[in-house]
Image (cartoon, rainbow, N blue to C red; front, side, top):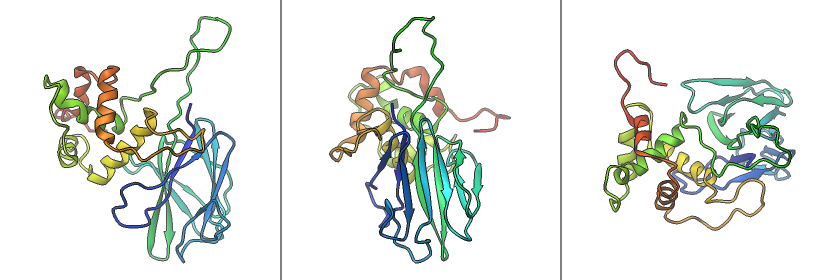
Length: 248
């Protein structure tokens, strides 16, 4: 279904809708300060040809083309989990569904987000010939994007079908018991990801970025409730961890 989506560093503080670059399997994106890159990062501390990202189906690889900088690839959901890609390293596989390449740039740290929303599974078709049925929606209920969606849907799942959606600040507070570092920016990031995951925005297999999606939260909740993507028993993901249990 989908492959790799690259979200460049913000060009302005609190930029609401950062552009997305979609890569189909086998496609490659170069990034750096030079204008001849697929993604130009206009910062004096970034190499002219800094690196390259290549889509490999359900995962991606990173090449560090700089001469002396190590890049860190963080898992924003991994409580510090990260990998290092040293100078000159080619095609380092990245194992995270959500990733953030951190580029050290003359005192600044520039984030390049990379999403890998495609999930491939072993076929269980019982030996039947022909193409398998593609899943309508692919979810991992252990990920934070699902908790964000559950928080958005919660008022209407609690028996108020016409309740207004929670504000961004209310969503942040609802997620804090299990996600202390939740913020407006991180919640918006997950909402943008859900818009791609639920195909409200075109996937990386098309060059069309689609129109700007207005009423994104309302559209997500409407779709999720219509197709029972989030049920009332799923709201357990919003519960505070019990004593003695370490939050993921």
